[in-house]
Image 1 (tube, rainbow over the protein chains, first blue to last red):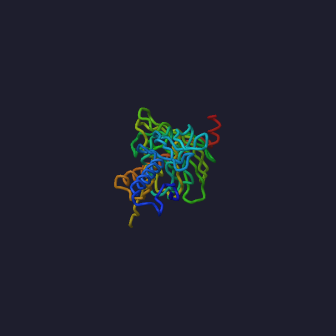
Image 2: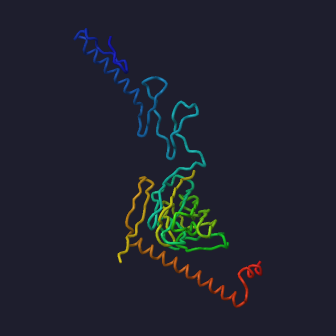
Image 3: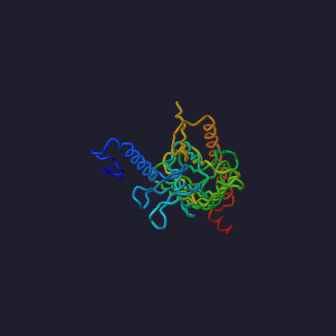
Length: 245
Length: 71
């Protein structure tokens, strides 16, 4: 009896009698049905299938739970859904700085903390600091306590209360280097005030280091962060926002 | 003189999309307010410094000598 090339389904020989046609079609249809089912074992929305140890028979993998990621199992022979281990970071947004501000919106609430890293910030106007606002709030809901030191002085300041100041003065050319790491704790919590810790360094005219605590008087979950210059436009620089587990 | 349009950038994490658009009237007002506040802070700091220096001059002290006195 003849068979198909890939799945070995039985088909009538050229010499088979016409009277056997119905039976042959039934046999072929049944084989197709069985193979199709073996290759598509999914039963529920979100299921996926992967090849089993048997050829032409796939295994169903049910959808994982919210926040889980697909990984290879410990036997290194099949995929599985797993909850990411604590401490992992996921890049949520990245890009360049330009214009009056950069807003990162629709931030997922699936992480424990957020880490925003801003590098090589250059401004259109000389001697401008960088700042962030949360959830588009520009009222006096912020407090920043900044301990700073530079080539000639050290001190503590409490800048404008309508934003959290993140970094020191930057230059208007590409010759200076700056980095600001802003860690926003428990940002998705809806019953506590929000705080962030900031470590910043700017190699502008007067190289400055800053260690700051920013406080935001709101219990709302943080879903957007706006990066802005204290005054004037941002010319260039980069940002990356990570979700931290 | 024509004033160049202020622009803002937005990155939507859900869509993974970035757009650059003209600032709205409300955003422009906020940007101008921020600039005015920054200028006021700068002027206040400058005035403080001048006043501090005037006191030091009256006392005949340098900034370093004052630091030494204050420990």
